[in-house]
Amino acid sequence: MLNKLVANIIPLMPKKLVWIFSKRYIAGETIDEGVLASKLLNEKKIEVTIDLLGEFIETLSQAEENKNRYIEIINRFTAEKVKGNFSLKPTMFGLLINKEVCYNYIREVVSLAASKSSFVRIDMEDSQCVDREIELFRKLRMEFPANVGLVIQAYMRRTLSDLESLADLNSAENPLNFRLCKGIYIEPENIAFQEFKEVQTNYLQALDFMLRKKMYVGIATHDKQLVAEAYKLLDKYNVPKYRYEFQMLFGVTPDLRKSIVEKGHLMRVYVPFGEDWFGYSTRRLKENPKMAAEIIKALFVRG
Image (cartoon, rainbow, N blue to C red; front, side, top):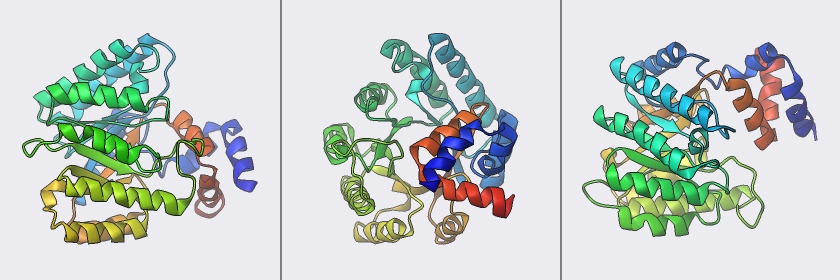
């Protein structure tokens, strides 16, 4: 009840106050701040994936603006020689408004990244978007097999069947490239697993499938138990280090992140930035009220 109460109150609070807890998880509002945060991570032998904040737009003019901003971002980050790649949410490009416009805008972004020997990850969003985003990924993968990847969410009941259906795209020359995460959106029980252990089990089954099929996988988790089990699977299948990486969110579990890096595994941190940080923070809080405990600590312990 306390978590839900805080989740409902936070969006009504002044932005400056909300920033107290948000700044730990967001690089800033500007490209300059995103570049700085990324370079600091690079100095720690950590690569990044860059994410411009925003999602679920209402007009196609917003989609075009987001496309142009991503072009600016790719040009800037590659010119600065930041070690990393890029992530984007299709709803920022009009996925739920016009699929063709969305595809054309994202294709332009992926094409630019490919011309600079870089890579774009298609983020997975809520259940209404899954089929459309898989279709979008398939289409882009046919043209840019080495430059586009997809996020897979372990809490979705359909995850393993989706992986099986995508396996035909896998190849030794250009293995499928997935980020495997638990998933954050609130979904009904018939669509997504609700229990913590169920999600863990499905996560490990999906990871096992990816490694067996020799796909490239970004093991995205802050769960110590999943990290430990991932180590076992990597050893079991003798997976070479060029075929996987670990991934974490900006500002989350830095000690666990450090321990993974010290063991010699590639680590990539998801670096979000942009003017929509307030919307991002409050939406994530509504989707996951358990974050309220972190907010209370930020306001009354760290702040």
